[in-house]
Image 1 (cartoon, rainbow, N blue to C red):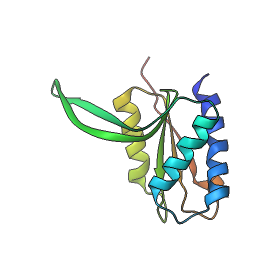
Image 2 (cartoon, rainbow, N blue to C red):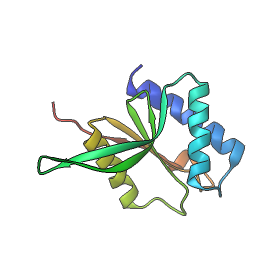
Image 3 (cartoon, rainbow, N blue to C red):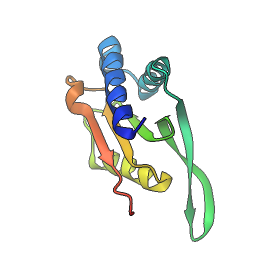
Length: 127
């Protein structure tokens, strides 16, 4: 299954979680519910995945944490904030670059319109 197919399924799971829970909860609640929905859909899902990075040839174990990783291909960053900021987009792009993955989904569940709060972020990998 490619990233586009996975992202389509992720989007459906996001809608299901949002329709069941609505806005106003903590990020951790949405993360747990979304991971559950994706697992029910038959996906391999990991949460709070450590993401070390290399600086000056040294592996820095201070792990950043990917909220949800689906099929070891798509990163999901879950937010529950008044509005998404530029730093949230940059965070996902940095996670994509550090991990060598192509696609990330940034979602803000604290919204009145979930459709406008799901953002696809693509890492243009050098070929």
